[in-house]
Image (cartoon, rainbow, N blue to C red; front, side, top):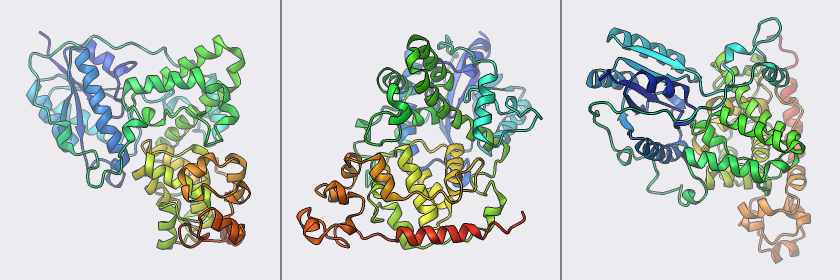
Length: 480
């Protein structure tokens, strides 16, 4: 019997369309491994909400492997040491893995390669996380793109991604190494269980990812072009946590969407708009590869000198959904209660933090990192910098969302806002996004006491806007 090989799972927790796993299956009996390295990434080690998802995703992956005659070996500790130990225990001759793009990923992969070589084994890395590898998308002059639209246009001119591949036949090794218990890792919250009920909202794992994609394409993509901006409507895919954990490949998403376009030509515009959001994910990962300091430093160096403030009370009010601006509070409470937030509302709450409160985008990025199920380092950093004005292809500094206007435009009937801010449920639409303008009798009839059971605005919109514009104006004179 040939020597076994190790498949090292990371953020690719699936069996379908996994090039590195297909290659491993051809090389010999496969020992599938996941290592829980709590120190990996430093301050960007996995946040609390993501750990909840990881627990369930690993459980689903284990079931999938068992159904294919294999099993998942779990280890906890330093990645390099655990892989070295597994090479010794299994006498494996090769380690296979999918490429990752976090700032520490390339260095770790090189360490694994060196460690394996020192033990007479090979390390083999394959693509599978993105549609296009960062080195393959360049401007006409051969430089990386820094603006999204031409980047995505260039991607669409490249050869189409390869078709997704099925689950390979996984041969068993002669014996299995020891495995840790998933329950012993305590990835789920207990006291308090802030994720109570999340199992009813989400289905982590490969099957859940496939179902989410087909539900979206079969039922909601038709209204995606405009409907995706309205948080009360079910017109977004909710695929982002599945993509973050690699439970579905972007190639699967790409080809399923292309098939729908061919079958229903009238949906072409909506499908293309959806695929451009997959393109934004690609762009963020390409930028992170180009600028690995993106999560910590402004892409536009002028913003290193921006006069950020840090008022703990204002930050806490934002985190807790107690700003006095209903659409902002609705978004922050949705985040805390579900591990998710609608994308339009993400832009509104991020703009409020960075421009109304003049709080550094890194503080918001860190909060999202811990609270979001789909907390992807590249997308999180790039999106926060985009809203804050410091990122590549960023929103203009003078684009400051009016939280009243945003609520009235994108949740006019208040369905979303009233769901997450039930204190305002009985307030008439006219005053829903500006309760401070409601007459006392109207407030009393709705059971609202401003400053009591619902806060007054923590900042005045007009004054905050002027302060933000003044702060941004200080950057104009800098020659950086």
